[in-house]
Length: 105
Image 1 (spheres, rainbow, N blue to C red):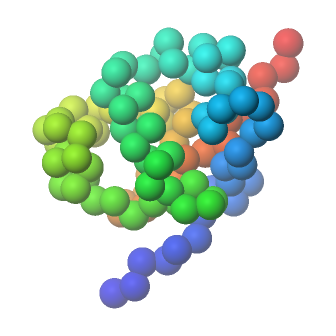
Image 2: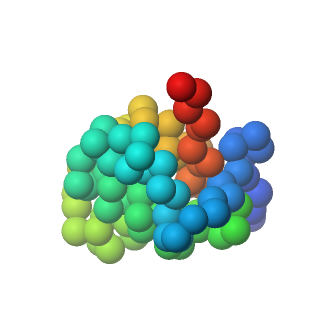
């Protein structure tokens, strides 16, 4: 079976924002890092590293737990935190790192 290799949240394809770093500065400025545990942030960083240009990744839970040194329950909790913070979407087995929403003052 072939896994579709396209983003499934089409209106939130991640783009690299202008600025100094590779990670979007809004992660700090808009307090995303404060909404997530260390485990969730480790998962987010890993997904950013392995995702394609649209933010899509096909890493399995098993592979992620091995690479990140966490059990499956902890991985699922981390995923729930990232989904709640609106940073990733997940439709098994595909992950998508989402473009961060614009915050209006």
